[in-house]
Image (tube, rainbow, N blue to C red; front, side, top):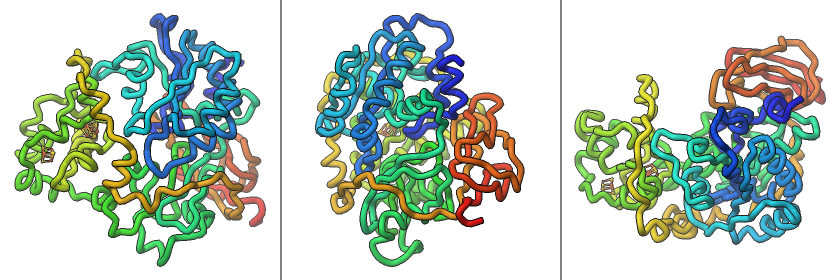
Length: 447
Ligand code: SF4
Ligand code: SF4
């Protein structure tokens, strides 16, 4: 079996958030990849998250093995692991594992959003992806270190069945744990000793990092292949204001409050890279009848929704990143796609515009939640897992099992027919439900 087929059959997707099927990323169509860069993204740039750090500390040999195999498949000449210089244990483990190989370590400062693909590619290779373009366009491929751990497991014949994630925020004991995919969020909160005080109704739960993460619907939701963190915040916390913003109210605020100072654009990391991203113009467009003044669609598509414009730049509590994201989804729903466009030169002061994570933590009142989250065994007995059929960019998977079927961990339960990645049972048990959007497995220990 070819390496690419092995990656595809193991159901590997970008574990860092986007969920792009990795077999497509590692098999770029055409082009000369001789001078290409393959970059392992170990930046873990959002505060509170520590799962990538724990993986780099404990599974560095797997990361290195997967990186070398991927570089061979791509024909990439430059192989780099990028991580933060102050992740001392990770750096030491990676150095040991990469000794004697052609892999280079690139140490990053603690700034946000250093893990953003475009920012990282520029930092490591000096190349800039044009508006509407992809890393392949500039001979680069970026894989998250958690994705590489999954590739390492696939080389040993193991498909993706588990996820390492951090449970932090307003919990008693922050932890990093490896859990079966589909594990309900309630079991993760239990693994972290429960909420600080009170109950579910007092908290807003964010999936992923505090800045770019999305809101969970409820505690029955299952962990997916891309869930990097589970972070409850009291509903009164500043971040929850941004996570629950009402667009029509924001439009009124944009009209009444936004002074068009353009500080949001001046601090935008994508704008600093020469992309035509102008959140202040999006605010102006929003206040003038929902996008009437939106002169450049690429300005919207080139936004990575890092949130710096809102969380750090704007002094009036406005949220340009929410508006950018909202416009982006509206345009995509209309079938509008980004166009390739030339870039402005990179901002001469780009390095001075990088925001230190420590300042962001202080600005967002995250200090009291910024605690160590050690990797510990997951000991909660999960009665069932609920596995979504779409955990990736592309089309949902097609179930290949029916209710009542007994399955073993690792068995194929849903197949991908196009852009996607197959799904495997994450526990031993019996299929208890199959619907259009998920498969439920009742754990063997409950039968
Ligand atoms: S959104 Fe805030 S930072 Fe941006 S132009 Fe308006 S007032 Fe200035
Ligand atoms: S969220 Fe704001 S700061 Fe971040 S890329 Fe988009 S416009 Fe720029």
